[in-house]
Amino acid sequence: MSRRSLHAILALAGAAVTAAALATPASATVPSLLDASADPAALAGAQQSLSRQLGAEFANTWLDASTGKLVAGVTDASRTSQVRAAGAIAKVVRHSATELNDVKSTLDHRAGSAPDSVTGWYVDVATNEVVVSVLNRDAAGLAWAADAGTEALRVEQATERPRPMWNIIGGQAINFSSGRCSVGFNARNSSGTRYVITAGHCTDLGGTVSGPGGTIGPVAGSSFPSNDYGIIRVSSSSAVSTALVDRYNAGSDVTVAGSTVTQVGGRICRSGSTTGWRCGTVGAFNQTVNYGGGDIVYGLTRTSACAEPGDSGGSFVSDPGSGTRVQAQGMTSGGSGNCSSGGTTYFQPVNEVLSNYSLTLYTG
Image 1 (tube, rainbow, N blue to C red):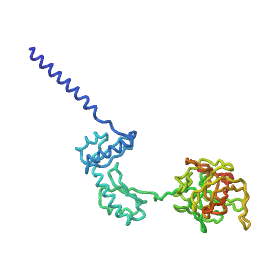
Image 2 (image 1 turned 90 degrees about the vertical axis):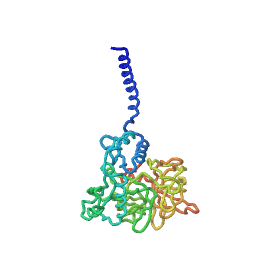
Image 3 (image 1 turned 135 degrees about the vertical axis):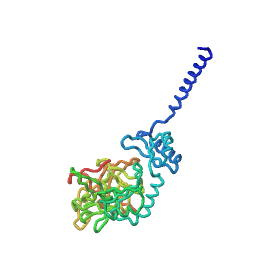
Image 4 (image 1 turned 180 degrees about the horizontal axis):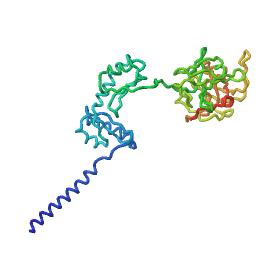
């Protein structure tokens, strides 16, 4: 072999090594796939980046249900490399995000004509469709969906009508057939039946009780006079029992953590639907109060916190100070004075009610 041929072979070999060396860092720059373990900001960033890059051919992103990997829909197969570069798996689909959103918007504009059997509609990004839920495949509901006139739509059968959910919160208003009082606390028995604890002179009104979001349920027990407590059974599946007490304009809701009694001289606060959040101190335990007309109540706690009509039954709790966790004390019974000039208010201790009805407070 000539010296020139040997040099040529060595040169080619060197070029191959150089090419291989250059190729290695290039392949290392390919980003790894994002998945459910990624920081939410990284996932959101990838979605925003792909939306900008792909424009009208972008068809949403989602986390795959089985693998957890980030997937991005795209309507043009030639754009899949951009998806991979952003850290997602590409899925070629028929409808862009804009198309699906337009279909959803069209249905929104027709919402007023939707029969009650149509329980809702949404964009299912993973199946690349707009889904209309129809209760038990009712004919009127199916016809309403079909009127959209698009093959991007799928009908799914709903077996139950959705309902609004609302929270039962201490201190908020509850309405009886002939009067308004306030929620004391939420509790439950050993079998999970839920109750609202309030004042007995309120539950003595009887009937079905409602709150800010609708029906709560019927009065299930009442003791007045002698005591001043009662319970309402929560029969509504829309009413959500909570450990919260409303502080109205004084701050965010506080959370009941237990029912340890605050000592005489200690700070307490009360919440009610007429005067909101008011605080004071415990003056005495076990006071007998004569409300007149034979209505004598025993075992009440005396406080300097003011209250007014409509606050009855509302929550008395320990003063949270700068925190948000409190100990349940009792339910507003009555008093004298008002929240303009000041007054004295009595509460029915909650622990007696819990014991007598074998209930446990909702705590958090």
